[in-house]
Image (tube, rainbow, N blue to C red; front, top):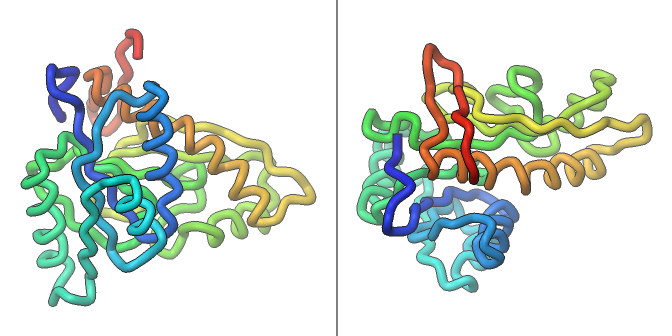
Length: 214
């Protein structure tokens, strides 16, 4: 588990592949005091709007493209070398769409958020609007988001917390995505706070949350 709470600020590495909206949410919550962390490093798997947003906020942002490496292992080595250099306590996958092999020293130090209630509507190919379209097509009455520790399987690893939202009969993928994202904006920072304050314990693949004050 990552160290914390600690005298120095809890440090996040943020991994992105798109618009950087989750990163923006982190920055807004840091600015208003709800998320007591700092972000020493952002890594993007491609040139995207999130790179511009990160650099505009004064953050170090590196673009590491999977296509520039001969294998997932080599790509992952490059990513985690930068993360170690930055001294990150926790890695947050924030719309990061590239396959990553998590090394042993980062086990239970990488978290992901998925826009559905795992184990439903998850796995390879289930991301973004693909998820919301599948939820609507199945006729689900609720959806939501899941924050979980990432491992070396798609959308796998111990679940930290989940939040539900209703699915309405006239929903489109866009309207449902917006509602789920509102839930994500609260759920992801909450999970980070729990980890930073060492209130998370993983036993036999299940997350147990100790009582306390965030």
